[in-house]
Length: 532
Ligand code: SF4
Ligand code: SF4
Image (cartoon, rainbow, N blue to C red; front, side):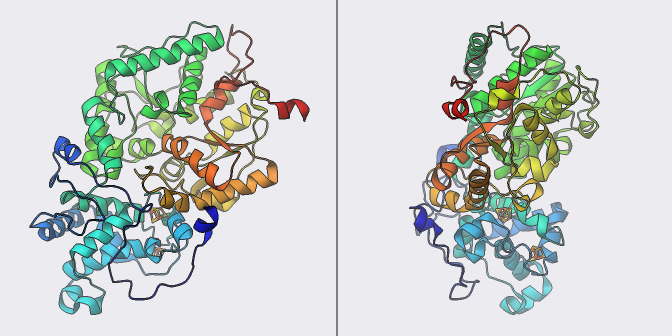
C-alpha cells in the first residue's frame, strides 16, 4: 500500500479551482457528528447525515446563518478580517503544508485553502465583489461550497506551519478555525471532535471517565509505581490547600504509550517531595473545543481555573500535551482569567520564578523538569535508556504556539545517551505535523492521515537510516496516539514515547529498589545493547 500512497502527482488539475465539487472518497474524510452529541451541547440542526450523502439536510436559512456568522466574526476578530484582506498570493506558503505535500491536492495549499472562504468574503463583504462578483475574485455561497469547506477545513490540522513562512504572518489555522466554527452554526461537524467535547461537558475529560474512574486509574498507577520502585507512592486527588494543581491530558491515564509518561511525572513528583494535587473534576487539560469554536474552547477551559480556585493552590503545572498548551498559553488568560487569585509560579525546589508564566500562572512540565536538572536536583542514569537511539518530534502547538523548543531537548540530552535531531527544516518552528491533530486522529480518514504524516515520517526515516534511531519522543497526547501507526506504515521499527517516560526510566529515586526493567516492564538493556 505504501507504493500507492507514494504516487503523489504534482501536476496542476484540470478545470477551474473555483469549481467547489469534491468527492468524499473512503479514507479521506471524517464521519459527521452524531445528533446526540449536538443535542447534548445545544448545537443546532442535529440530524443523521453523512458527508457522502447528496442531501446534507441543511437548515432552510443556512445561507443567511453563514453570512451573518461571517459578519459577526469579521467584526469580532480583527485577525480574521486582516487575513481576508491581506494575502498577496506570493505562494511562499504553498508547498509548506504536509497535506499538500502528501496529497498534491492544490486546495490543500494554505493559500488556496484560505481562498475557499476568502472568495466568499469578497463576494459578500467587499464593494468590488458585490458589484463585479467573479470578476473581482468573488464566489457565490452554494451548498457545494459548504461541502468543499467541510472537506478542506477537516483536512487542515491547524498546525500553523504555513504561517511561519508567510511574509505577512497570515495564520491559515485561524482561518480553518473560523471555517469550522461557521460550519458548526449549521450543524456540520465531525464526530471525532464533538463526541470528546460532549464527554468533556459531562465528566471533565474527553474520554467520559467519571471522577471515581479517574481516581481508580490514578490509584492503579500509584500502586504499580510502588511495585516498580519499592517506594510508597501516593497521588493526592482533590487535595485542598496543596501548593500546585497538576493538569494533564486524559490520555495520560488511559492510553498507551501515554500511561508511561504519567508514571514518569508521578515518580518525579514523589522524588522531589512536591506538594501537589490532581483534580478529578479538571481531569483533562486537553480541549477539543479548540477544534470547534472559540466559545466551546472557553467553556471547556473554564474548569482549570475554577478547580485551582476551589482547591486553593498557588499555581498550576501542566503535563505533556499539544493542543492543551495552545489553549493554556494563548487563550486561557484572556478567555477565563485574569487568574489574579493565583501567584506567579515559583519552583519550590530551585526557587526559579517562571516569569513567562506570570499571567497564565501555569508552567509546562518540560520547563519545570529542565530547571530541576539545570540546578542539579535530580540524580539521573541515562544509561538506563541506552537501548534507545532517540529523536524528538516537536509537537506543533508547544513548538509554534509557545516556543517550547529547547527544554524538551535539554531533558532528553540528560536522560538519554543517544539523541539525534532530525533535519533542521523539519523541526523546531518548522516542525512537520503528525497529520492527525485538531481532531482528525480517527480511523475513517486513515489514508489522509498517512498522507499528511508523510513529511514527518520521512524525516524520521532519515535519522533512522543515518543514526539507527529507534525511538521517537514527543510531548503531545495526540502524537502519542497517532504517531505509532504513522511509524509502522512509513518507517518501521521506531517506537513512540513521552519525554517523561524516558525521564522516569533514568530517574534514580532515593531508596528505590534495584531496577532491571523500564516503565514498560521490559528489560532496561536490550539484547542488541548487550552485544554491541
Ligand atoms: S505566504 Fe502569505 S501572502 Fe503569500 S500566498 Fe501564502 S498566505 Fe498569501
Ligand atoms: S495550518 Fe497546517 S494543516 Fe492547515 S494549511 Fe497550514 S500547514 Fe496546512
